[in-house]
Length: 462
Ligand code: PNW
Image 1 (cartoon, rainbow, N blue to C red):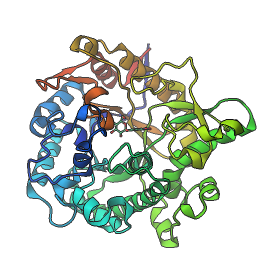
Image 2: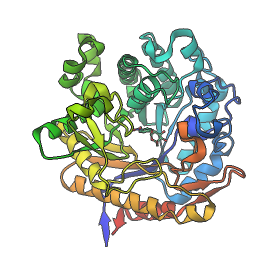
Image 3: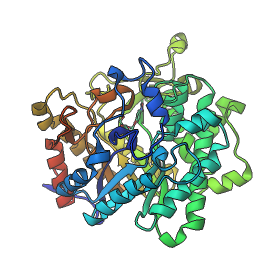
């Protein structure tokens, strides 16, 4: 039986510039921190880089035709800042603008709505070198200048903007755990970087609203968050789960929807957590037209046992674990994806409800959801039943959330095609379309065909 989604629900899929484009030295593009990071031995599995990747830089027309065949209504992609401003500041690079103009025009010609992310982790290396990148407050107006160029050049046709993708990852993985570019492992840097990212988001939105109102588009931010289930029903474990969510999503969403960081972060971090001025709080509050959410997994949360306190689990997407003092664990019954992430569809419904309640019923878009599956050959990829079932079960929970009153407006599958999975290189495949990295041939998987039907019928058959 077909379980319908609301009318006008937006169906799309997502990618990011560094993960698919390749052509890293073409079209006047400058280096980004990910080009640099990939050169450091041991940082990326197999020594992989984004130099060629899916070669989308040369194959975007073919890729857009494929999106059309899949029936996508919307396509979320990010801009490579260093294609637009090769060293991060100054005049726009005409070739970079032309490249993205062609993509936008081609999408529109095929009836696909472009959703642009301004920043999906590939900071121009020039900014890292000259002023310390996200660690320095002066990045804020610099990001604003970049955003302005994008609005001026593309805003006549692009009506859906996302300032930042998952600033939690930039801060925690890039500066706390050192597993993403630029690769610092520090206890305090993540809070400084996050602060500058949040303010950069706000300045871009301010510029958009003040200077591009006539373009009549919408702008928001995308945050990522896992769900946390209390290990037991004890007061302490329930508090641990809540604290974990506030340190994860509240850190980035509270300043925008509530005007400041969560109280629990201030209590625990004191002056290690930077402070927003009154003007900044005002600029932040209400600075997102919608709530962009990337969601992948769920873990159990509990109050750490005093004897094992030193071993707070940081592996499972915890981040800044010592500061939160939350023990994370897995239910042994949970099946995991190739990333080691638990498949817990109900977690998606619960997280949506948590957001709905905490942030006063925002319009939510799931801007990423998906899973990596071990697919050693084409044959296995074409029968990606695990991925199809993952999507089906997660979407079914989305539907339940909508029935419960959550204002979920759209869903973007991560990812359109297999691509460069950051520190995992090409070893992890998230695509609904198979990419053969030898021939660069694209082949839609079973999950893509299934997703096409979902879009066509605006519902899932259960
Ligand atoms: C997201 N975590 O990354 C990104 O937006 C994508 O670029 C990426 O390919 C996708 O999810 C799959 O990984 C994340 O550790 C990376 O919690 C790490 C985490 C979450 C999201």
